[in-house]
Image (cartoon, rainbow, N blue to C red):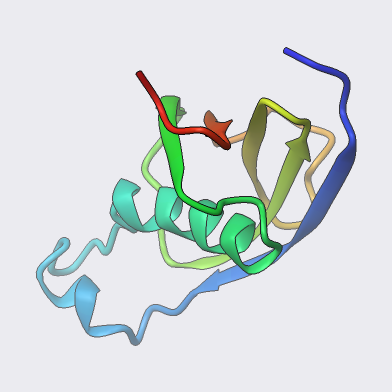
Length: 109
C-alpha cells in the first residue's frame, strides 16, 4: 500500500426512524453492512476518488451496528482507501468496522 495522501474524518447518522429498520430487525434494529459500506463508497465518490471502477475488500464488522451517530475515518492513497467506523467520540479505541476499497483508474483485470 502506498503513502497516505489524505485523511478524511467525520460523522454519519444512521437514523432510527428510517424505514429500513422496520424489517432489519423488528424490536432490535441493526444497520445493514451494505449500508455502512455504501456510506464509505458515497463519501469517496463525492470527493471524486472513483471515476469508474473500485473493489471492496476485507470489510470486517466487530459487532452489530445499531442506528445512531458514528465517527468515520478514511485514509486515502493512490491505490486504496482504508475505512474505519468508530463509536462517536471514541476514535481512540478499536474501530467497530474496518475495510479497504481498492482504487483502480484503469479498471480491474
